[in-house]
Image (cartoon, rainbow, N blue to C red; front, side, top):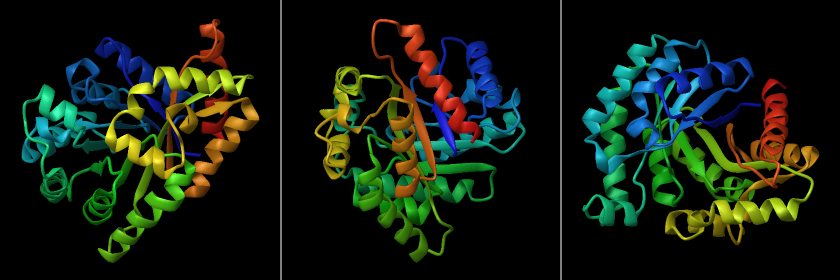
Length: 283
């Protein structure tokens, strides 16, 4: 199983250490949010140079914050610093609230914006040792992902959403464009615990904001998940294993696990989840 984790840290040294440990534990990839140290590409390049095989990806850099030509150049520079394959550039349009309220830009025509952006970045990176993916949840961007990129990075898309919506659309688009079968990275919160109801309640609390954002609300609805707590992967070891397996069976090529804590004993909760994920990653 190609299983990965969320990457991050409060210093470049910590990010390097985390990547080395994740690689030693058998994880296939780490995914870094755009806010990591203000810009994750530089510490990712250092982490890539200090490791051998683990994939390091952005999930995701906001397209509106960087011209596509500069975005591609930055990714190429980070890959050159790593000195090995394994860098994935994940880009997405973020959300209306972020783009308009925080960046002061217009979110109108977001689909066309992302389609043009993907064309430029994809063309520049075509012969570069960089995997290029976009966050695609709606039909248009799933088509763009299949036609122009190496795949998509999801968040809050459960097995039902992958099987019924994501996989068929992106796979058809890639085939029609004469491209290889696309990657589908399915990201979800994960916690191993004995009380599933308690775990889902905690996930609903910790990840509540995602249920209010239209882009994620759409994929939750497609997956028939009333909220983030329902989409999360929660339960004992057997149940979590079955839920992760179901994602692969639905069409995911990779599963990005974002562990969260359930209960008062935080260290035990973290350890239990990490131990199972380590076991699955090595399987």
